[in-house]
Structures are given as structure tokens and as C-alpha cells.
Length: 155
Image 1: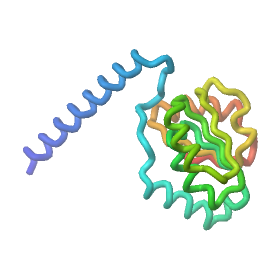
Image 2 (image 1 turned 90 degrees about the vertical axis):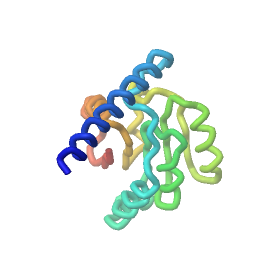
Image 3 (image 1 turned 180 degrees about the horizontal axis):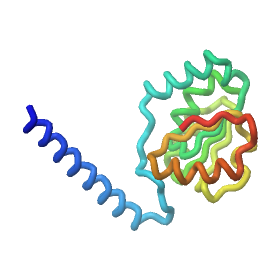
Image 4 (image 1 turned 120 degrees about the horizontal axis):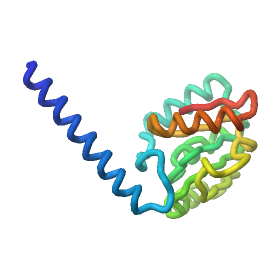
């Protein structure tokens, strides 16, 4: 059993090293410095989070801002709960997928690096960001500088 555990640890370490190497390669080819590889939120996580927020009355008629929204899956799922949806992402192709899915909802999609954008929290009562640890650390600095009092942040 100990040997299997040791092999699993080695395999996990090797996979993490390969993922970091691949991410570094992608970074060098990109004009934007990403804080994490593209990693869509699992639908189960989105639905569970939105259900919990709705049960606490934290979504109804509020405005939701998704940082690094990708294909807008958070925004699409939240459209039945929120009155306004705003998404930021640097990938225009992903935003186009989301735009089609959000047809009819009050939404704004911005093709930009949200770290370099100003006043991104003005439109939000709830801010969501599905980031890795490094991205969360960088986001914290921006939140501390720019977030208005009373805004709920889900990371």
C-alpha cells in the first residue's frame, strides 16, 4: 500500500511539472500574461454556488461580474438569478460563444485583461472568479484597492 501511495505521489508531481512546463510554453506565445491556464469551472460547482447564494438572498436582482469569464458559463447559469451580467476575458473567441448563449439577457462582455481594466467592480454586487492560487493573490491586491464596500466576492 505504501508503494502505491509513493507511486501516486511521484505521478502527481510529474503531472504538475508537465502542466507548469506547458503553461510556461503557452505564456511565451501569448501577448497577455495569464495568471492561470484556461480551466473552465465545473458545472456542478457553478450550480451549487449559485444555489447557496440564492438561498441566502444574495443574487436576486443583483449584478454579477465574472472575471476571466471564458465561455460565460457562470453568467449563463446566473442569468435566471441576476438582473445584470458582466464578464471580462482576454479571449474574444470564448466571449463569442458566451455572447450567443446569453442572448436575451442584460449583459456586457468585455474583451480585456481585467487586471489592467479600471472600474470593473462598479457594475457588480457579486464578483466571481475561478482562478488558481497565483491569480487569487494578484486579484486580492486589486480587490483591496478598488472594491466598493458591500460587494460579495466568490473565488
